Length: 462
View 1 (tube, rainbow, N blue to C red):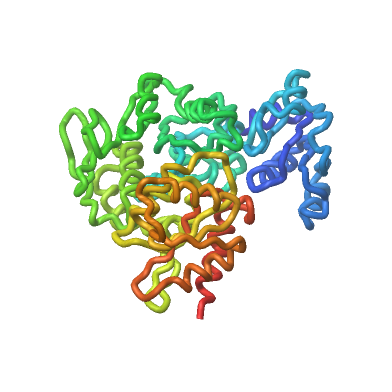
View 2: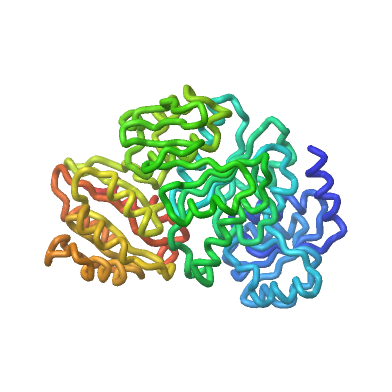
């Protein structure tokens, strides 16, 4: 166990700790704290029955449980770990902090105990793919890599075994970043567009949360920005660190540039070719951008040869324009990760023909106007389902590019019926893609559950 981790744990042993949310990231945290002898109360809005055997396991390990609708009442603790889905200014939490409680999270704790360099990726779209590419580049270069945050597994539980030569690669959401007081050594912002406005008060708060990924950097650190995205590019003036840009439109002083045919590394010495765009395995202009972001972050660590090898071999991440099956000449793609209009737009532009699109889901209270023209250009049949179906439909009907019947619009409330309707409309040579432009929470636990359910339906077609 490294000294930083052991010192942190020692400070916790005399504190009364509450962990709010018994979920994917917090369950391992709870178990780890208990294993080191900490006084932990696990709090969750769900009743004990919904946890199956987990609740009893936690009690046997020494945890106290505070479950049900009143789980946030009377938070009389020294230290509170919040789950990212709960706002830090939730009234009960705000009262606890005002009364002297310290508020933190699993990810903030990881930043405190991590002894190795941290690379973190945030943005409105492309976070997971860019994070995964960076981890693949570093592994190919011989590094021991720990991947976590929104993907992989919670890294606080791994921190005790890390050493200074390892690298932690994180995907960070705006929820996680809101209360961060540390920044990574290398930060990447893929882009910024309206997202999660059901959680954030407004767009300003959303952007402010994203800034935490670089706010506490120094001149020894690196910030990578999307030079073609106005909101992201504008953050350059606020950076204290070395800024690298990636762009299709302008050659950066330091970073990556694509002329449509080639991705180049650019610095004071000029341009160095990394790879031809046609040699990248995963399709789409947005994936060219993801590669440029990743290359810009770690190019001086891994070099051109490693960048070329990974880009020409890596087949992508589940739920991101994932080819599920070819059946009766129809190609089915799972792009369930596309939980915003911009991500769906990028997915649609990856194909050279008009597709059959399945879209709709949980309403994050973001605008859909920009999606309408792209659907009209790239979609021949639009199958809508879920809470945002009406918004997406209106975005199409209200745009100047719409012509009656082009695209054909079908609405099905049931998700299975929507998928079957799409497959029924398809003929040999067609592409059917699930790219919802919406979160999954109206009908599914998350985008991964939605994507796997879609694949089950498609693989069951006969």
